Length: 321
Image 1 (spheres, one colour):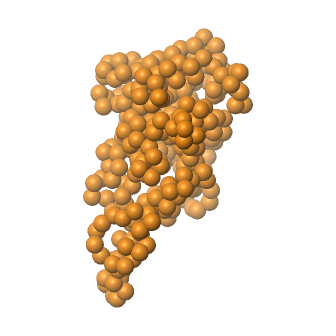
Image 2 (cartoon, helix red, strand yellow):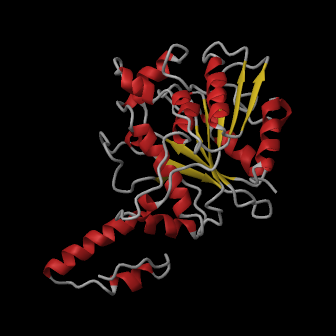
Image 3 (tube, one colour):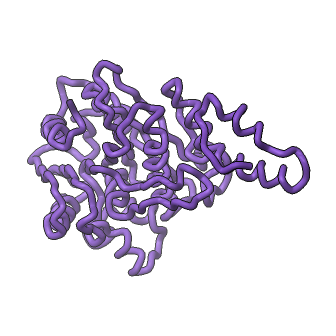
């Protein structure tokens, strides 16, 4: 079998036509075909701009404990009006303490981004309440970044303008992605795994950052289990993992947050400053933890001030027209 990639429309005829139907050659050809299957599925879906949840691994996620919905990480795409589309995209990680996923921190953010011409992808990642711990959540977020980047041409996106956004524990996952990314494996059998997982920017909304003294205990337990090693606590305290290669970040919190201490955002911003990474930090006096855009309903009349500040920042980053 010749090692070449072909377009989604030509895939069956061009690729299958090269497969020998005898013995060893057949087995090898089928193995190669299975490696290409994830990208093929996303390519075919991309031609029609999918709207339904897309499984990140059609054959099952690494380390999956089963095949139920809770074991199957997905991306749900939200495409803007083509007349508004800027070509930029955002992967969204809803919060929920690594125990659940807050719907208003997923779909509502996607709709808000769509209004500004940004394509959004809401990530359903695996959770501690379903028996998963690190690195499952990071694997899901990294695969989401690679998947969007791998399909950028088909989905009319700029592969160099793909960000990540998260709230609360989802903010921890987003901050993990901006500090624990890799360039991909160029020799990987799966074409998606050849893509970089590095976001081009991060938006962190009242995020959990540290696994240390100021952490949110429920998020820490669901992510790392009941008795993590000091080394693991340090590794997943993302204020300690910032480097000069961390992408630009928009970070916001409120002084009134009684669930996740504001020090999480302050310490992350200090780490960004020390590493020379561009950032915006906004600390607002009022606003309850989990407020999303300002309320749990999609109500433009009650959008919090952070949404305007973030839109201004996104325009500075070249994500908006």
